Amino acid sequence: MAEGILGLDFGSKRIGVAVVQEGTRIALPAGMIERKNREQVLDEVRKLLRTYRAGKVVVGLPVTLKGEMGIAAEKLMKEMEWFRANLAVPVIMWDERLSSKEAERVLLDADVRRGRRKEVIDQLAAQRFLQCYLDCSANAPKE
Image 1: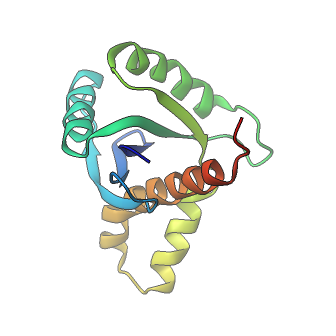
Image 2: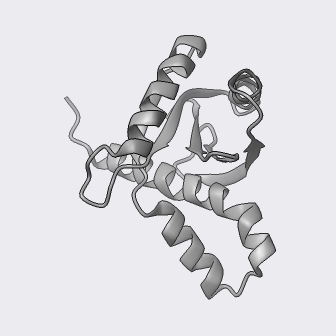
Image 3: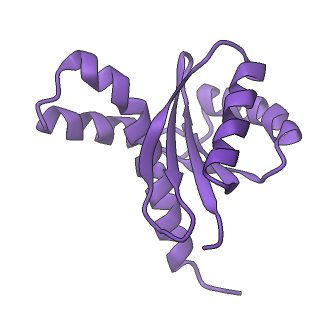
């Protein structure tokens, strides 16, 4: 892998951020973006792309448990059209089904208090689906 990858878990108020740094295959939680407006989010994403020298963005797609596009997924797809038009790197949508629930379970098992869970759950959800993306990409047949 020649460059980093940025993972984003879009929520209505916050965006969890995860990153795979250059030369590694491990996704790590990397912070959170408080959403004010899409221009502010775009500016922060661009800064993160430069900071981590990322060549692509992987965005969690909230499909239903059946793997179908629900209202939330449709809304996010429309929002990503604008981001794709304004970013100079590919934006890949990736199934994030249950990533937030898994992250919450990990935090509960670790006995993390409620206030702290809210601070990190979006980052961990982003880390979980970004790692899944990496693992699936590594195992995909090469053409």
